[in-house]
Length: 114
Image (cartoon, rainbow, N blue to C red):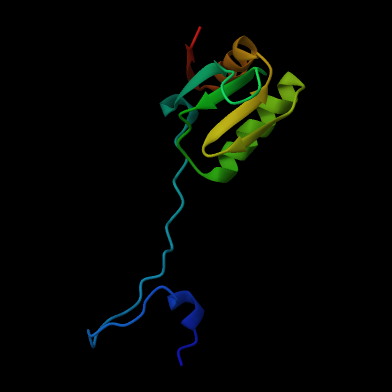
């Protein structure tokens, strides 16, 4: 048996003599500099039991950089939030404050939704 048999659990059989299993190793996205990023800041109340959250989308880059940016915004606003699915959620209506913070960091922002 091959040493990496657990990595090949999805492949059942191949008739190709030269078949080599490709692992699903994807390289992480390179983070664009802040000047090249355009972030959209909006207020969202859907599926949150009427609670308002500030939603920041449009970040292009690695997950670690997105988490760092989310942590910075949560700290500066003094509230909780989360980072998931490529979006930053800040609890409460902090659109103007997050736009000011992001602009100071060099990001291009757009206020959306009201």
